[in-house]
Amino acid sequence: MQQFAFTLICIAAWATGCAKTAPGVESKDVFTTSNAARFRVETIASGLEVPWAFAWLPTGEMLFTERPGRVRMIVGNKLLPDPVFKVPDVEPSGESGLMDISVHPNFTTNNFVYLGYSYNSDGKHVKVVRYRFVNGAFTEPKAIVENIPGAPNHSGMRARFGPDLKLYVTTGDSTDWKLAQDNNSLAGKTLRLNDDGTIPRDNPFVGKAGYRPEIWSTGHRNAQGLTWQRGTSLMFQTEHGPTGFEGKGDGADEVNIVEKGKNYGWPEIVRKETRPGMVTPILEYTPACAPASATFYYGSMFPDLNGNLLFGCLRGIRIVRVVMSGRTVLGQENLLEGKVGRIREVAEGPDGFIYFSTSNRDGRGKAAIDDDKIMRLVPSE
Image (cartoon, rainbow, N blue to C red):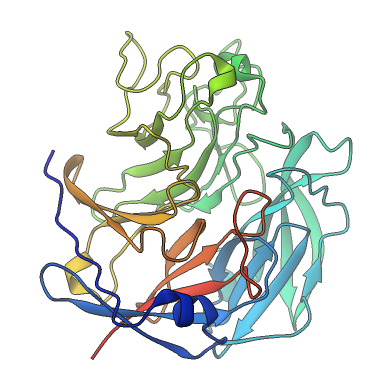
């Protein structure tokens, strides 16, 4: 596989520049790629507590989650001082808590926002709840799917709308990794639902004995990145691989093309192993990079990145850029490696800039005094 050369040249030292950038103030550090594209890093919000996911309203405001249970808002690149909502029954523990947020594709007519989080029925389950967000208030909660097995680790949880306007939900194996192959369990799966929580009739296992009808794909350990490739409608997921205690070695993080009814092998196969009826990842990372997000970039600000897959890494402390042609990987490169710490969410904003969040206050990183942050890549003149 071709390894794209990527030279990051920092004009000013990070110790006195980017790491202390004030909210909304441009960094003076300029980065140059091998083909002379130049960009800067801007900090949009700082002093946050493990921002896990963000989504934009049609009018341009960003909503984002903080793990302890707060939904916050950025308006005109300025962070509102108070949360717009506090989830009443969230149960933050370990890697869990308030995780994903998604805005319905038809928000302008229905005002629906979806939150995915672990909750306090016993602290060991995860659910997706739909709210109506009107006049700055979250109202009319409706559980879309609940009682998903969860744990302080391996709770998955991306809940995103696909091109077919169905809601896809990634779930983790809840550290009971045999559940990923137990098709009577929602753990270790991709689920597919209508926007009201009902089950689409064309799901692959509807009416099939031994399978929950919500299931779209099986055999996942802990997928936390979920995105679609424009033009092909292929679903891509990033997934955390095993750690030493599971007896499968360390590493084996994955990028998968996830398709209807397929089995992605955990815990029966890892890395590039094969087995009949199971799917091998298109990319595998050992040592682990801990991929925690996924997005395809189609904006106008960075034409050289058009159609590329981007994802943030918690352990690898970088953004990975994967150059794709349909199903084929043409090459990859690392962006901002070691510069800002643990990177979780990555997404293209409505302005065409590339936004990302740090996760240095999650107990595993080295937090600066102004962590955590939401930042963005912008072209440099």
